[in-house]
Length: 162
Image 1 (cartoon, one colour):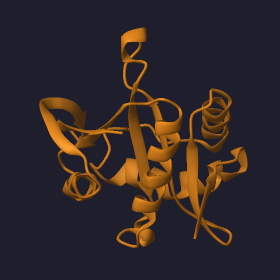
Image 2: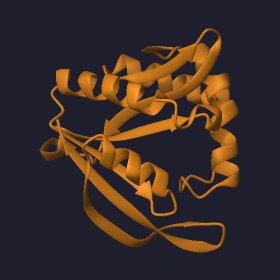
Image 3: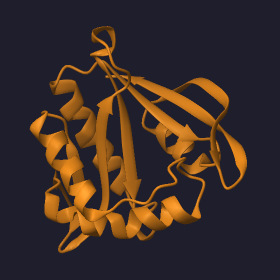
Image 4: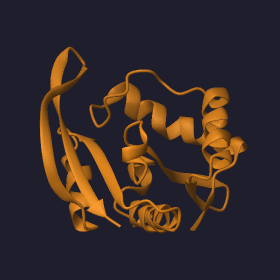
């Protein structure tokens, strides 16, 4: 497995494992599936702005991806980012998430990011445990912050100072 910068050509493979998680699970609040063209533009924008958009690849397969974006707008938040890490279910528990996050955090640190936030659905205890394992700490739970599948879900906010 290698960790590398994503390319716009990776978008279709990313959509292939991400969309079922969007459509069928409550591990993300997102309800709109990704399309390869839009995701390719997102990857290109992210990279052109100097942010990381990484993939874990094993030969021709994309096993997962990770990126970060501004946590909130405004100059006072310039040194705080929010991460996204999504891994194909077949790669869960194999170290892919940890490898992606190690590389992502190093990129963010080098870019001057001081604080990394993880916003996690409370219905995704695996992600909460993962972030805790890699040094994030619970800073807040926002009750009923998201809605999916006809029900309200809490948002768990975790933080790591880089």
